[in-house]
Length: 351
Image 1 (cartoon, helix red, strand yellow):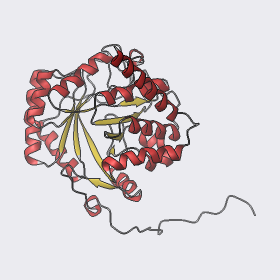
Image 2 (image 1 turned 90 degrees about the vertical axis):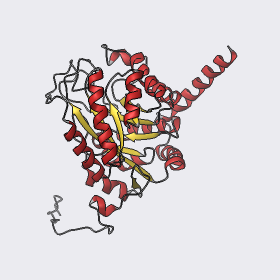
Image 3 (image 1 turned 60 degrees about the vertical axis):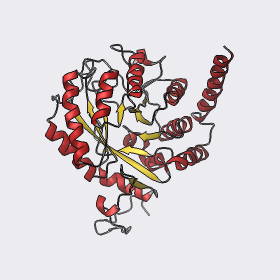
Image 4 (image 1 turned 30 degrees about the vertical axis):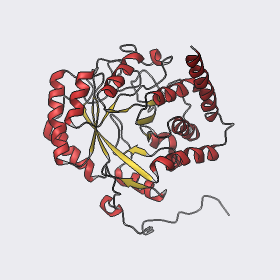
């Protein structure tokens, strides 16, 4: 009983400390520096790039209010069935050639059938034979037997986001619960799959909710934590709560990093729109990001993102630990500015 009380007390103290990081009273630049020191300790100046392949779009029975693929959404998304094995393998090769560390195969729906797992196992085996890239799958709810099969095929990591705290979860989804998501993550752990699980910020949650999910992920020893900033899509039940200033986004990333110092923290969906002119600063707490868009929304292209990584003094890491040469990614080593297309406009201020 004493150990239980001590754990509860320690978690309460940690939650209070982390909550303070989200307050404007905490100076932002010193906070970013604290987060960066932890990021540097475990990941140096390396950035891991992930590319998503949305292998099946829409056709989902779940009512997750933030998602354009859900049954409750009126968003104008294109529905299509599972891509062919050749398409998925070809797109994995393109991801590698674009500098990706990890290729993320994602499918909508409550969870895969065993037949779908059969098909995916063969696809993953092909990818691992032909392409030197790590593979992550995001398939909805899976059981332990399915997790073991994916692990044997060569999947290194399973994504299943907690998205928000246990207390806030019923406000974002009713067709499954927070416990269902935990069960999938625990099944992955039992199969020795790494877990990728993160959160979505901007859905009306409190600071306490953000801290709770960050600590839950710490207790799960999540190897990868994507931090998504809600993209308000017309037709979705949940729209932005208007809390996402660039400063708040950076505070959340820093809080997640300090709660999970050894985890791969990914600045994920919404970084381009919500961080705006401060986007490059996200790489101080985060050591990973997506390029070429998300599930149903566009994102920054690879070249634009690689310029930001290079200009901030970081490098892109391959799955084998090597560093990608900037020339391979279409960037010259020289920092040249072409002013030939710049036009000097007349001043709008009258003398």
